[in-house]
Every structure is written in structure tokens, then in C-alpha cells.
Length: 115
Image 1 (cartoon, helix red, strand yellow):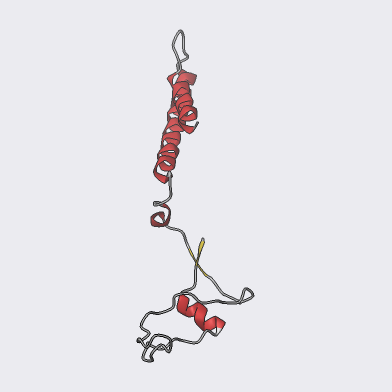
Image 2 (tube, helix red, strand yellow):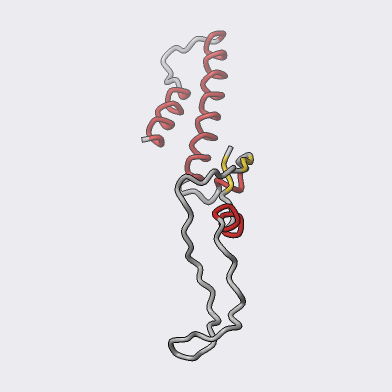
């Protein structure tokens, strides 16, 4: 779950900040029409804000740093566990003589990649 932040209009209405006019008046200091909007406003810290919650999707986390490497490591670890269990079941019925258990190599690769 993640929380959506309120928009500026919602914050202004909750804080009671008056809406600005469209700049029809003239600035008294230099006589030019005031056309720029002020983007900063202050709200009290004790303002009761209700945040909306939504579920996190894959599109929300795909931009995170190292997410693709993490996803790859999880996939490789899952495949290594599957290879390990299949080879252990196989070696239970057909014991090893003078051979190397390659499923242990897969487990060592997972540890190496994780580090």
C-alpha cells in the first residue's frame, strides 16, 4: 500500500488559503500588471489531512534503483532452488560415486551474486 499526497488545491481549501485572482489588478510598486501566480503557500502543521491509499503495482516500483537487478536475483534464486531439489531427489535414487554435485554450484552462484 502507498498513500497519495493531496493536491495543492485540496491543501489550500483545507487550510483556508484564499484563492488568488487572475492578475487583473496592477502592482502598486511598479505599475505593471501582476500576471505570475504565487506557487508557495503556508498551511498549519496540525491540519487534519485524510490520505487516500492505493495498492502498489509493478509500474510503481520499476523506476526504483536496482529493481531490475533485484528481480533478476530473485528469479535466479528460485531457479537455483528448483535445480537443487530436483538434483537432490535424483541423487537420492541414483547415488553419486566420484562426481561433483552441480546443484551446490548453483547455490554458490546465488550467494556470490547476492554479495
